[in-house]
Length: 222
Length: 250
Image (cartoon, rainbow over all chains, first blue to last red; front, side, top):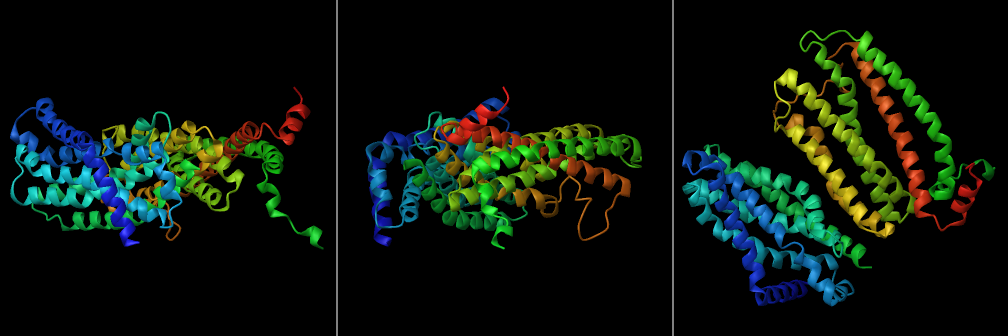
């Protein structure tokens, strides 16, 4: 079972790295959205500093939604998804592998580039560290919930808008506690509570997400 | 003796349920009209003016029942959806599909009446308070469910895909319900509780409960009517629908 998980992660990573532009799209989108806010709101640091957590989190959430449509679409188109469905390994395990691979190519780059963008918003020291930490815990939750939406909308027309409507309401707790952690660190309250809740969401979503996505895939493909 | 036992599974068939629903709808519709009449009379003419909020508090007679219905109906919808997904029953999916628009309507009424009440009382139409925000998310969940079902052409697949979404979204309902206890926010706590005496005048409570029953009766009547339409549409190829359509006075 572990080898199947490792195999599907490796396979999806290889496929993603052959299509490097897809990976770059997510990161570039993230950087551009975050950089647009100072132009829209005004460049004063006193105004930007309280916005930092919210802007970075919303941008990360939208960026991670960009690649959701591709999570199962290529496998669906070339028929390899059906092979996964009839594989002897549990489907939810294979879906978990795909979620982890998707996070490695679209979530992790956001976490890595976030400190640079945080500095643009005058985040330094502990709040910046908390931002990176909250994204590190929170972005896999986004991938896991997003996989359910991607599986439900597989092969539907207008899938892009529909996936946003399905997935964004479920993202709400993540953004509340993710951005809340940074704000708590900024105001000196201590982010441990928010981060613990985020970690709880992560555990919950890694159990429920693959199961629900696997069920949804069987419904979509049959 | 076995003839006396009610066959509960009889009404799990759309053909049987169609007739039952048709017989029930007039009763619930009439009951709803009567209850609304009594409830609105109590609300506008009998209930006293609140010493703190003046006349503005009267919005609770529709706001609170609508908010209750919005959450109950979501759970009911998710329950039907889960039942349909587990036992592969046809009727459950139709019921879930029939409940969704009414649930969305009550969510919208709760938000809208809350906004109209908030303006004179809080001085603002909208605050990003935990309960208001989670109720707004509930509206999005309803709309997502409706949109997902609408964009899948095969009704069986639509039912099952919607069921997965409804079950996952059901996590939100307890968050709304307990939000006033978990977060110390602007929205007031519950005025009605099963475990302690109500913190409002008896006639106010009575008016609110009558309105809540009126909303229940209205929901049942509308949902059954919509379910009948869905049954006819989905089973249009079957013999019993042909019989129904041919037999009904044109």
